[in-house]
Image 1: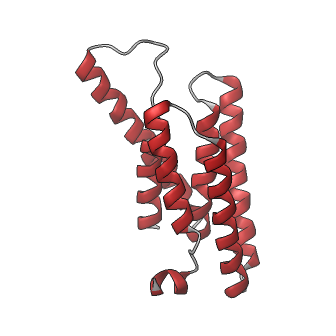
Image 2: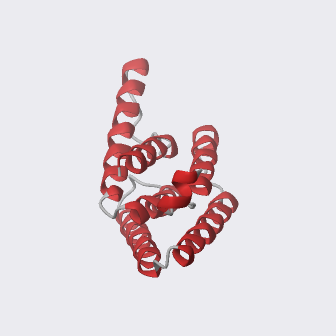
Length: 156
């Protein structure tokens, strides 16, 4: 707890809890509930604001918010022009980008890269188990994104 207090990443706790709940929901139902996204975002932002005020680092807060917004906008653009991403994934990506961006902006690249590699492994395992995956099949992106988030936060 002392490490969290000194480094200014109080927002990691609500983000980790919310992303875990969202990954579980995505895995079970292929849905990302808006209520959990909203509550996680609210708690995460409040904790980050506390850190920003406590550490006198408003620029860090604004940078993390800007990076998360940019990730969300890029993901939304991909959602608009392709069928490879669901809107729940857009929400997850934007939410998952905030804490790594707070720690170090380049950590967001690690989160996304590891998440896509983990998703590719998931698809490969499914293909090996079932022989073939239908063209319109969907995967739950929440669990691979949670893996990416953990790797990005822990290595940043």
